[in-house]
Length: 162
Image (tube, rainbow, N blue to C red; front, side, top):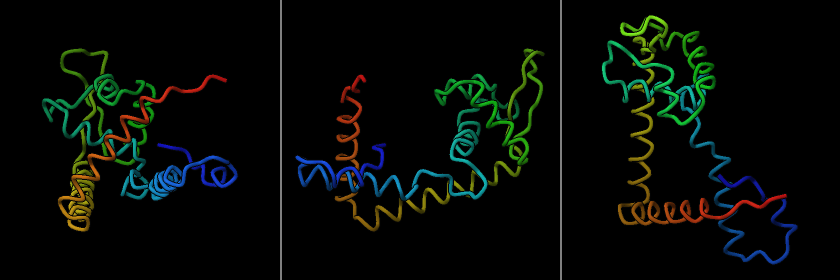
């Protein structure tokens, strides 16, 4: 996401009014924290791990290896391990021995973890279905198209070397 440049934007010269407006909108979206976890006390990355376990586990009885979660989320294993430790302390996951490899463990959702995922899923459904109702089908399609186009442009812009 674009960092909050609003204070700097007003000081800069030569910024096109439309560019200024786009920067203000992106900054407002970022400040809304729309992508944070809707559950108090649960970090967004922890919620993502719960979703990963729920929806990517081949066998719910077996759970997933930390390395599998790490690969799917495209983050390091130590990062996932730290979040798993937090989820374990909150009673949302358990560690079970891997039946095929005694050296590793698998991570499985607890009943409480399953309940949290159901509540978060319902919250996400209501939020985005509500947004579509608010905007209408045509504007929702156009917004999705424009956001993807903006995303593609932003990731194509080269970083500057300093």
